[in-house]
Image 1 (cartoon, rainbow, N blue to C red):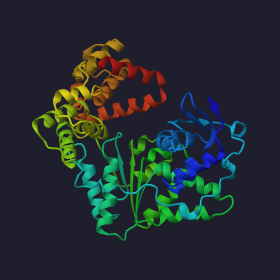
Image 2: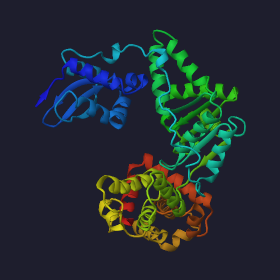
Image 3: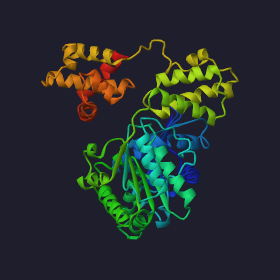
Image 4: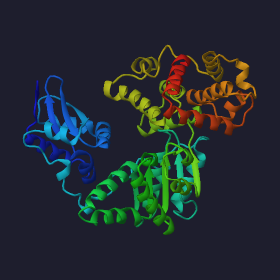
Length: 461
């Protein structure tokens, strides 16, 4: 049964949510939502908005909060469904007494432009596990923390998700604030920077107060830590504002640290001026950890949770480290799940219990993936000889499958770039890196190739 949502109840829901998040988040992501209907059979609550960015952000980051809050006013739990609608559709679908539409949202107060994300005290240099995959990035960040804007500025860190970029960034901020509390350290995501810029620009139609507040916030800090800069790709206004912010801070000799999922040169939809500035000083990458580093990370995590490192747990740690190779967050999450069996279910930890409770990790059908098995699968797919993989032939019908095989070897094994190069006819590690970057970039724009890669991964596994 579907019915409209009473406006009085919706206002109460908004007030409850507002108390649990920052003013910036509330004005940017929650207030633009309009209540459309509640479906008591499907257990869903439909909300509408005219902004695509709001749809993605709410579904990803605020759905659980909305579901929990609405549960206070309706019997049962209702999953929020956020729909992108035109202005006319939204007007026609709103309740008889709509909450203020996006057009009538009051301007964000200048003093609401405050820090969105606070530094996480759990992330510091002491509990960051250093291995061959990240020792350079770690050394750079520690030097920055000890002498901000003196040795390395700017610093650009890049890696695949879940390898420790954010940990290092928080560690820098925590170290500086501990040793010099007077320094103004600001950690923020590029998404937050974008949303604040949009809100300030909208408010500027009536007054320049918000634009001035935005500049005051970002251009008067001693250390700016901005996470996931790739999200400003394609956003010309945001890029221009960040360009001027970057220049101001750099000229004032303030420290800038930026993270991304790609090398600056691979941010194809980014202003060339920013690409150039991001490479002015240090660009450091973080590779997936090797087996020994993964084990060290898990043992450190177990010690933090005060779990006794008995023989069974050590065996489980080795098993997890063997299975999860490319994402530290997934690695630690798997261990946390294992340890929860002891605390929540009061069960003795054994290898058998871990296998039973974590079938998504310990799949009995798993096979060992090697460079050779990957090359053989790719050769069958593209009808070429195994010897072609190691040859110097440069025809596209050979080089393209060879690059795909290199990419898949890096994705599905823990082999280093030099070792992969050696397996493909003694090629240099830079050749392997070029091949991986090339295929990774093509996947994003070539859906047919993306499907081929997906199919190959399934066959290999």
